[in-house]
Length: 243
Image (cartoon, rainbow, N blue to C red; front, side):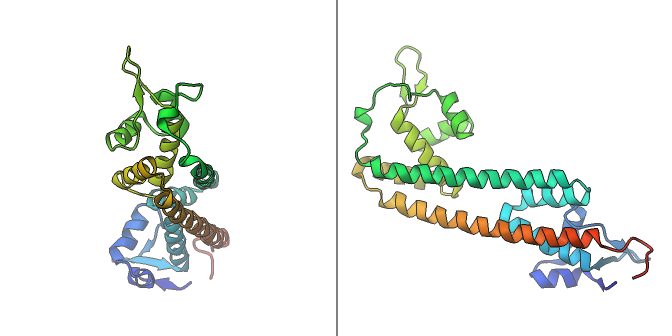
């Protein structure tokens, strides 16, 4: 079996040898054997594991990639697959939300807050937070940034969100998933409210669509890398077995 040094693995990906050691220590790579003097001995299995881990990072981010690899190295395949399933579910939710927002764009100009009255579509802060799967504190932050402008009941002071607020909240939600700053989102929504222009929104949605496509392709690459790694692990020689 070919042996490799930490520098061999690091060189392929232009990372530091310390990063390779950290990945092993965190359980993202399988444990390495040691020489009598304490030096790590890596193999092609570790090289494949590193490629796999980096592919997971591109697709899912560092935290989720770490969960996947640690689950595999703990022989908990179901846990790894559940983690992956959650990420795919979130991507699907993002796509569905984007689709609904695109459909709403055609109606943004004709909609007017002054024409909106309390109706069955009115929601409390808790109901809207549950609908978007965010916290009420997040909605308050959006309000502080000027993204949402809920009305308050005169007698209780409680916020209530009408149909236009729901639209703005959906727009804020999808743009936040595109990593846009609150100030940028507030500007986009303010432009829509004031001028009826959807150009800024259309551009932002196009950019997010490209990001979703890129993430979907990265997930395909990550799945292929994971499948190869699992196959190699399944057929690796047992300790002490002849090469």
